Length: 190
Ligand code: AMP
Image (cartoon, rainbow, N blue to C red; front, side, top):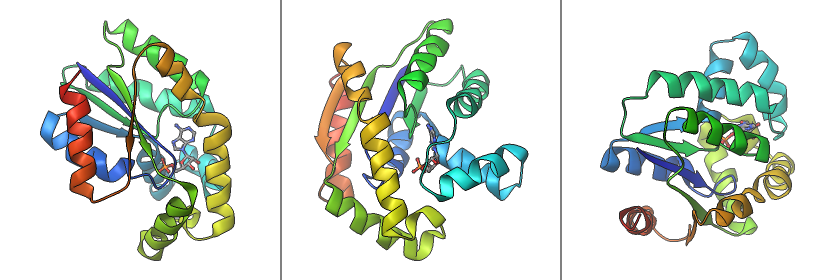
């Protein structure tokens, strides 16, 4: 299986690039943010629990996202692999993901981290907020919370994957197709 963690701060382009990669490599796109937004749309108890935190740019509890991932992994074990988008976001999540994959005799192939500086992220997220309808894209204050959560809890995961020689960092600047080419280069070298 080809299991890629597509990594980077909010607004780095993970969702956009995931769409390109799932087509080319026939992978399953697993975005915890998308799944949570769907739960909110369907007014499930999980959605109601997560909404307040998400609207303020805070991470939802680890056990909530880990359980979501667990059930989706189970249903797709015959696939070519997964693109993990927005997951893992904490060390706890990364450890659980490794365990879940190991139980299925597979593992993370690579973490590819998209590098974009804060000023550009804020610009992109505010622009997206004009039509995304997402509460967390609407204000600089909430965006700042999301970037802070990323820097404090998520960015350290680069070390975790680097220790396993799985970290690949690329620039997230430039046209969508240029960034896709950079990702393809990394994946084809695995
Ligand atoms: P995203 O669409 O990946 O930017 O995620 C939007 C929001 O969903 C985040 O700001 C968090 O509140 C929540 N979320 C998504 N994925 C995770 C995760 N792996 N762990 C904790 N919270 C998450």
